[in-house]
Length: 178
Ligand code: HEC
Image (tube, rainbow, N blue to C red; front, side):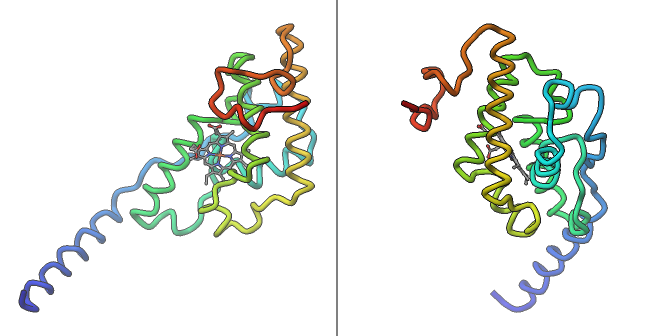
């Protein structure tokens, strides 16, 4: 290959990079709190709310606080993917639209994700150092989620899933309590 070809390839790549800067993926800039947010389903103490907002809401609510580099493509597309996927799994801004069973399941998953240090995503805390939760903060959220599960399960007259085995769940191994 001669250096002319490399030069051409470089120019094409540079042109593509410049062109995609004009494409902006839609941003997630709705309201975090509204008629269907989680506070309509459950009491959320201020300290729990503060932690969730700081560490989870960028991907699990209707409002993301974007870093400046979200305006650089393809980073913006990559972020959009995370937010879309995160919201599909759990959206605190729409929590009250879930059926009670789903609410209970989501609270259980929240407790599990925190116990296993799966959330917030590592790629996120790498940059957002202030989103790292202390052990105490994690403990507060887990205790709150478990209490919420119990209260919601009571309204259905079923036992809370933290007290019973749930064979339909794949991550059952973590659930054995004696
Ligand atoms: C950078 C974006 C991001 C942040 C911040 C984030 N999440 Fe997620 N979350 C995701 C994505 C993407 C998924 C879906 C893919 C997966 O499970 O990894 C997900 C999935 C989940 C799930 C469903 C997992 C399951 O059991 O299937 C729960 C629950 C969850 N997140 C809770 C949280 C909580 C609680 C926080 C804050 C402490 C948080 N997330 C912070 C992106 C994020």
